Amino acid sequence: MTTTTIRSVPRGLPKAAIYLDDLFEVERILTEAFSKLPKPRSVSFEYQVNSELKMTTHDDLIKHGGETSSFALLVISEGLVFSSRSVVSLYGGLNPSIDFPYELGDSAWPLYAQVQQIFEARTSRLKKVVAQTSMPTFYGLYGAMGALGLLVIPGFVTYVLRHKVNPAILLLIPLYALIYAPVWILVRTDRKKAKIYFRHRRDEEKTRQSARKEWVDKVVLVILGAIAGVIGTLITRLLIGSH
Image (cartoon, rainbow, N blue to C red):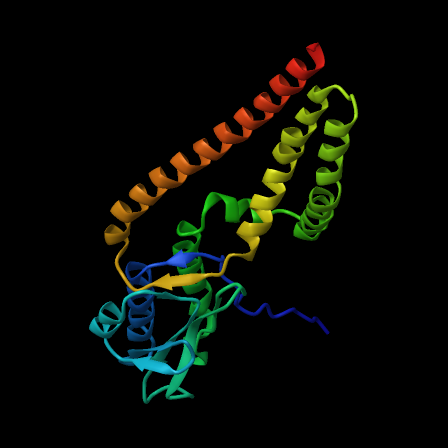
């Protein structure tokens, strides 16, 4: 007797921030798939926001505005085994998931690939790195280095200032920060929630460009301030030591 393993269609999707453009494209893919069944079915969609608020039209979503990490796209049709069921779901910090109605059968495989591609396109480069990284290791480093920074560095600075130790050793602190920064960034990226913005992608571009410029300016100021502080400390210690 020959046995074969039946592979089920995957459910997990990349953790991404999607827009109405992406949601409507998923609807188009599903509508087209149902129309091509041996017994074509017409479907409509409903939207569940924050587990309680239900909407039925695109205009409802646009008027609602904002964003959420708790969202479900429901497909509605009298011809389905379940007349109403959730297809795409976002919930908190978990990866988004997709559950195709039974009626779509094997056609769900290429449909999954199409929906996955939509989410993949909205996944940041950092999230793609995180998806391919052993995050438990980085969470361990994150905790250990964070504790080191809180418990050891203040005492280390005090010791250097109170005793006649070469103040250049304080340069170990920015070195520590340079090592800790990528670990912190990866962990923070992994903890970000998947979400949907109730607006079109094009409306987001101008806002993002402005916010990005402001963020870069702040980072530059913080780095310059930290460097100036270390240099000031070194100069002060050298002047005191010369007298």
